[in-house]
Image 1 (cartoon, rainbow, N blue to C red):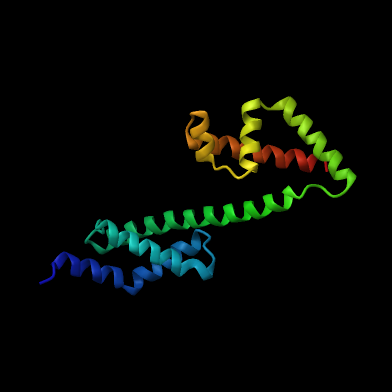
Image 2: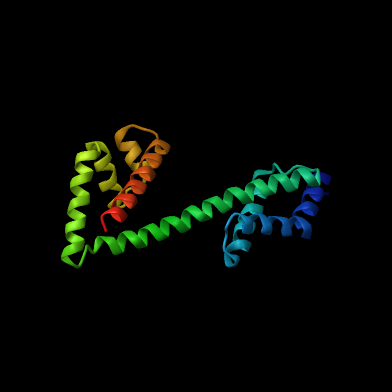
Length: 165
């Protein structure tokens, strides 16, 4: 005989209103239409695997919404990582005209004057494909610190490259 709590949880998970809500949360978090169902399914699987789904429908809706928001953020990070890898691959080919080469040299010279050797090493490692976790482990700092610094350094590079273009 099945547990009555499991029956309640199954009823909640199959409720079309909750599924519609989960899809709406995913869309609001910027998940592309073609990926919404995947994100929702991953969230449902996570809720089932953790056995923590509240029995009250409103609490369950909030709990599932939280999971969907987190999965949507993960999905966006994966998409951004793929885009950055594509852009890094095109940048790795190097500048093709002399003016671009001159701008690149000016940017590198400015970076060497402005940044610490540690941050330059982080940028080089990141450009070669190392993750923030690997860089953090090597330098003995937290991954979140490395991610924050790399984000600021990338913003700085973007501003500088636009200014000198």
